[in-house]
Length: 227
Image (cartoon, rainbow, N blue to C red):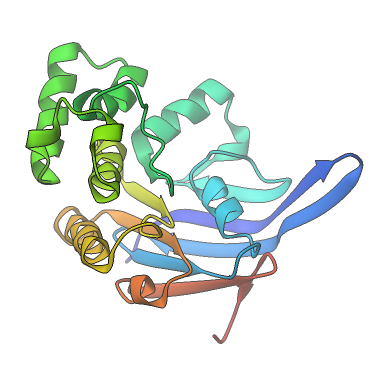
């Protein structure tokens, strides 16, 4: 029997600004199993990124429940939420979000500092991940000294630093050429298959969604069924 690692129950998210309410999610129900490769597709403004923020425990719903590996995140204090994010979930952002003054090696170490791993352990793990993404030769380079594809691979390595069960990626190939896109998607596919990792990719690109075994479409803040 498949184990559900991500579950959303009637999740609604309303943003309020200057007295105006804007609904981003309108009652989303969703289950993602351990080891599943899922693509979430939808047009701009459909609620894709808000959904990623819910799944990644970056934000809490206005109503409804987000359950990560059996834990309802709305019941957690911010410190516990941060620890959950740091250990269970690895997030790859669209624009990499690498620290500009840190080297590739130091950027990969950052999530391990948050959970207080010792320096030797951090450096050994960071070098292991640099090898995994084929960038040992960039260990001491700053982000500005790397190509977009290299920065994206460093961002993926950083997301893997604490050996998370879930990888979330937000439009991770939007700024890359087709060869680099294929390399990165195949790397994620290999992770999913070899480590039984749960991978969820937010994308608007059909060729990226083809890598997933399950495609979920979101339109106007709701899951589109039958499409």
